[in-house]
Image (cartoon, rainbow, N blue to C red; front, side, top):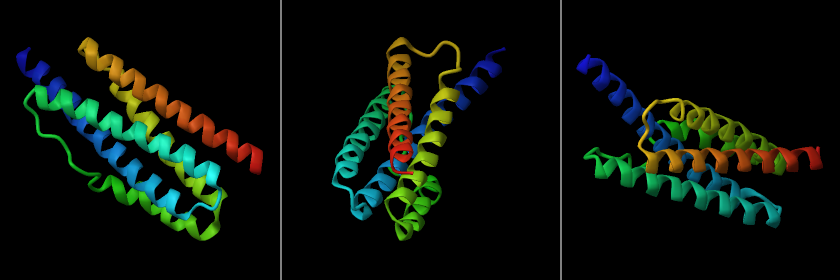
Length: 151
């Protein structure tokens, strides 16, 4: 039975690390988008979203470090998935960039939904993960609202 608990814990910790990598990738994608967008309102909002992702990284990394785990320091291969979409979209303008960001946020929401299904998440981390999930939903909602408005 102890092995099963270690197995679950190992998967949980790996999912946390993957979530940190996704947040790093989101930051890179937002930086690319902010640089390429023409609409200044979008840039300001995306700066705020980028700050949310930075906070998620700090909070989850603090938990991992307190538990003695190494933390990711960058996006790893996740960067290719998220930033690549945004870079390609920059050639097609603001609408395409927002659509690429929408896909990235949907992926991040899925990861937050997955991590929040684990049982026995420590209370302090549970709040961090639920807050992160809500941030991601807010990001996606804003992007979808903007796309509806300009499409």
